Length: 339
Image (cartoon, rainbow, N blue to C red; front, side, top):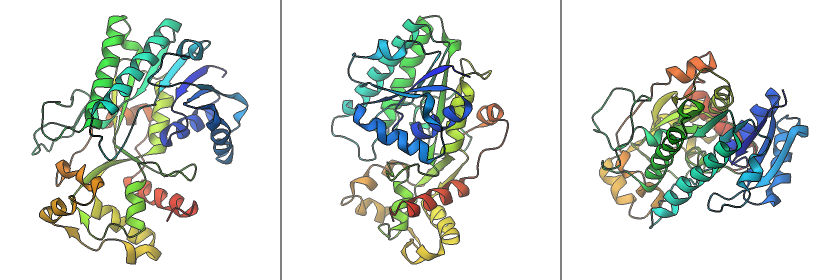
């Protein structure tokens, strides 16, 4: 297979795993980075993970600038757009997140449509599905659900992902090509790191292992393994899922449950792991001094789940267990000497 895929955000945690899966499947990958000075490191990281990078090339693209998008799309059969800003600590001006997310999506999709690519796979998020709803809801969130931007505790990140995905569907509808778009909507992504950058996804496990979380707030996370999310992106390029949204998350776990998994699988770190859950009132006081905690107050005690049946059907198997994703994250953090 020599089909060329433009993969934006190749230097990210998910982007690296997608590149690895694409190369191992036989695609030619044109990866975008903001600065080409990152290219050698990305190439070496993928080679260290076992990839043959003969069919790997790089282009410089910026979500906030027009330059280079048309040229980057030339000769590509598919677009896989993963690049989007992500933070834990919310900015004072929400448009610092929303603008590049939406405008980057517009630039990528408009260039792809102009180039006549066959299919576009967009990395969206559970954030565009499961927020701003009744906190008492127990039913799994599905592809038919959209985040209510007028609802409670909708952060700038949640709004950025929701607006970016809605804009993608608007563009494809206007072009008469809705069936040529697939969005992947993952929950919190964990799993093995490819390099020494823990990014934001592994920060929760890192903080648990290094002892900086003395007691666990009652914050639940729907967890999915990065290898499943990457495999879903690659399968969506040619699978019978055109025009669909694919929520993907294995199961929800409270932070204390994550700590309990780590206590079993990494007993050497047991003394650093939290031994009890922090009452919600104490979390709210603690958040006055910890900006990372402040950003998750709206999720205290709210356990959500996703209907991942379409993603599992595409993959032809069950998702990797959340416990395994947690353990794999810890293993790689330790291997890279990050804890």
